[in-house]
Each structure stands twice: as structure tokens, then as C-alpha cells.
Length: 117
Image 1 (cartoon, rainbow, N blue to C red):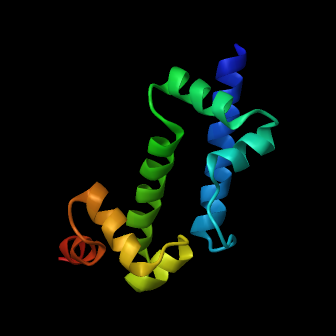
Image 2 (image 1 turned 60 degrees about the horizontal axis):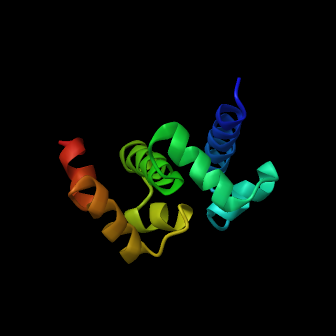
């Protein structure tokens, strides 16, 4: 396995671990690229460039996609309010609604209501 592939796998592993902790409510803040880079003992720019080259997507895009999947899962499978889900995912509730609508095209409440019917 090449070094870029090893870095990419390690990044995805650390990201998934962090997101699982976020999903379960065990972290108070979200990782940034420099946090994961520090865990992997590489420079943030090198990590970002490697991920972009290997996956043809930025680390931010990957993070947002995975975060949206978790948000949708929590909305559909828990009785938590949208505000509680937002806080669990370290968002201010109004910013969470904007983030969610940007990626899903509808608000979290409309998403929940549409899938509850």
C-alpha cells in the first residue's frame, strides 16, 4: 500500500471514530483538519492535499457528507428535538437548520415530518 493510501485510510478511520463519539454525545467540539493531522503526525496541508488527491474530494466535503448522514439518522431514529440533535452535533440550533437545509434542500423538521408520514 502506498503512503497516500495509508494516510487516507488513517484519516477516514480517525474521522469515523470522531463522528461516532459525536453521534453518541461524547465530545464537546468537532475536529478540524489540524486536529486529525496532529493525531496522524502530519502537517494539515499535507493531509488535506493527500485526501484531495486520493479521493478527489476535500476533507471538508467528506466530513460534511458523513455529518449529514448522522444528522439524518438521529432525526429519523430518535425522539430528540431538532435543537437537541443540533447541540449534540455541536451546532447552534439555527446554524444546524441552515447547514441541514443547504445539503438536504429542506429543514430538519420538514425532513422528519416527510419521513414520518
